[in-house]
Length: 155
Image (cartoon, rainbow, N blue to C red; front, top):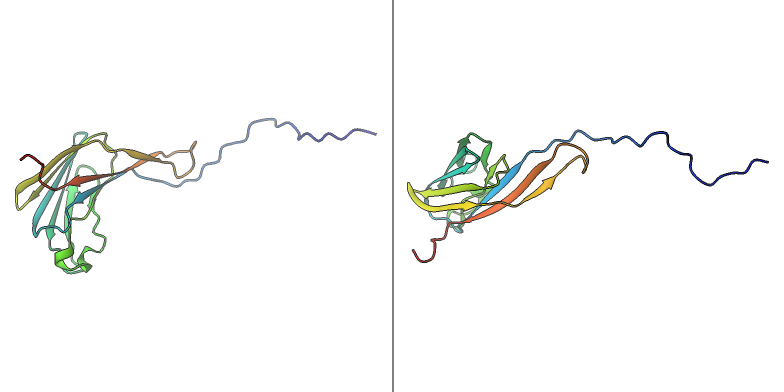
């Protein structure tokens, strides 16, 4: 009578890695810390890795259904409005800016009514995002920085 082995049969080749096809993008969210915001016309300029982005926002924001911001640049850039039009004018603040990039360092300049109110150089920290698993492409980076619009001390 042949003996039965409790060991699994040997595999002839290692298992294949199967990856899904989910995609991701690099994203840096820039929070502009000013609450509540002062009424005025704001210009936000961002420079990173030789590329530029620009957003214009007016506070208080227009009624819901009308665009509250306009952005353009040499990298993907957008204002994240998040229902700002639903808040009373006295409670509105500048909303975050999102860029489709993951720069090591960037410069953010904020003007209100054409007067420079903040200029900051920041080095964001990122989280690695791999939607298809750790051994599958793509690999993207997601980060968040906060830019204080409070006047610098000592000035």
